[in-house]
Length: 112
Length: 115
Image (cartoon, rainbow over all chains, first blue to last red; front, side, top):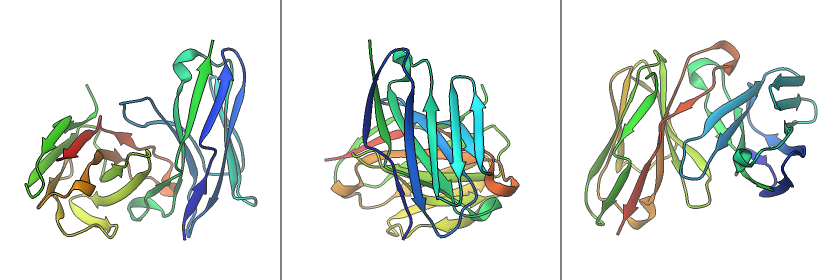
């Protein structure tokens, strides 16, 4: 089967650093993505890793190790507005034949 | 505004009714999708279309029928609604890029409640 595992919830304080891990088992792998979703809102694209290593986008970084089928999202200098659900997602096929398979989401609560 | 827009935002209807959700994107993307998000926030793909052609049909009951009149529009019609259809339905689009780097842009969602 195809599955992505991530923690169901994480709590941290403002200004802290938090890491959300994701392990995956899919029939095809064409990159790991991360999406943020606030309550009542739409998922929004945060980052993409196609190759091993770290990608940095402002306060957010994402890492991938294909040999370990593992990635993480690192959020630095946490702000209250970062409270949201974060989803890892694997694309299982190339070009138009692929689809994103999502993890069940990690609910991040940022406390003052 | 460049975006994926879907209507309606909320839909409350009785069991057995038929309803439609419309989606339009002006991003110039080739591929459009329907995802269903259940009460536990799990996002599961239902369909994908590329340039009006059905590419993925993820074992969805045939009460659900997508239609893509052109590559900027993907509508979802649901017949004989059941209680279990209650969920948030998201339309999304993405460019067709090698290696799948292009992120998905999601619409704001349609919260369907079947009573």
